[in-house]
Amino acid sequence: MELMEIFRISFKELEENPSLARKLLLGLWFQRLTQMQTPCADREVDSMTKLIFDWIFARRPLTREAAERLLQQQPDADDFERLLILTWAGKPSRPITKRQAAIEALFRREYLQKSWMEVTRRVCPCGNSHTQERVLLHCRPVLQAEVRHLRRLLRDCKIERLLPL
Ligand SMILES: [Zn+2]
Image (cartoon, rainbow, N blue to C red; front, side, top):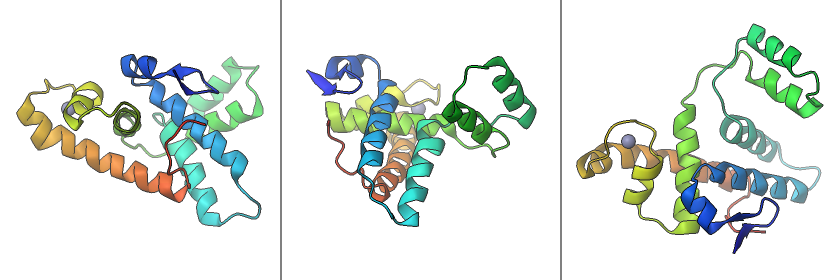
């Protein structure tokens, strides 16, 4: 069964590869973008910008020089890719792996209905061995807090229904 038509990702693929959640979220973002009416509220634009740059395409910050080098190495980059690379440059550091884990956790919960224990063990990036105690006392609450941030942002973006097209 297709989970999302535009990317042709199945439930089974998502189950085996949690990182596909980012692609699904990108699909929802584009879907929402096409529905936005003009003029739209500043807050909505801010939220959509935040979701795409700070969550979906979040990455470690580049120095300005590294960004210039990256651009030179990719002469075929289109305007959007160039903008992305420049946006990455000179940004303050932020906990990117936590955000990626939150996206994966949310989709694992929503689409695959996995328990928080399963979800945490599968996507938590902490690198420690996930004993029940560690999951319950540390990893799960950290992950749940980050998922709450993501949910709030999705609500602001009006991407509440995490459902296929
Ligand atoms: Zn952990």
